[in-house]
Length: 244
Image (cartoon, rainbow, N blue to C red; front, side, top):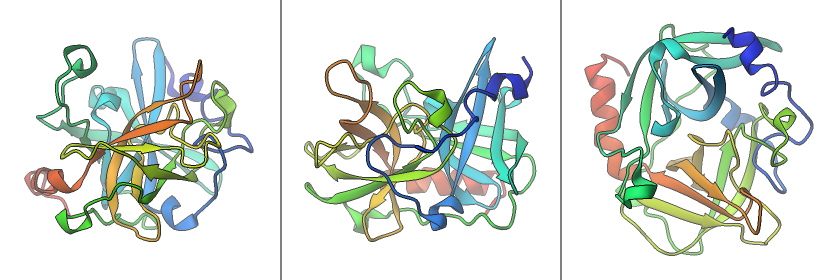
């Protein structure tokens, strides 16, 4: 399947942007986030990702396929650009069937571009153990997913939304809710997107899962994998790859 045909519906763009519910824009995070495309057989899709090095992206492990079946996507003065992927590394704590087996899972992966990203992209700061989240804390999610659930034309534009950290606290996961019941949260395409504390820039978690109310699948709850406990793994892989 040709990439252009496979992604045309997802990348058509639209006024609502990404992340469902009331959202806002932030140009700074446009320099720290990017889209990761993947295809399996005749199906294609995408996730969000956060820049952690000049050619390295941190995303969700469930977004990963073979490097040959992945591309890194961005726009250059409006024109679509797709970079090939050199290699990927999935966190050893990831279990693809964790929801069925009820295993603890670390849904993180690193992606290396075959060529350096444009100079306008800047690595995001990763949270450390000193940035421990607190129940009730206001968080921000930044992703390229659906702005309106079920409408593919509302993907491909970076939008941010404010959510609130809820119980339970975990050493692996972060749980957040729509604090004002206005329908804010991650949606399809936001997997791999950064979650950070409002008023800060350190990435606390990488989005892994979302849920909605009633028959909806988005806009109520957002789950992310905490970054601080995995800093050693992230930096270790980058050293193994000879990256910075």
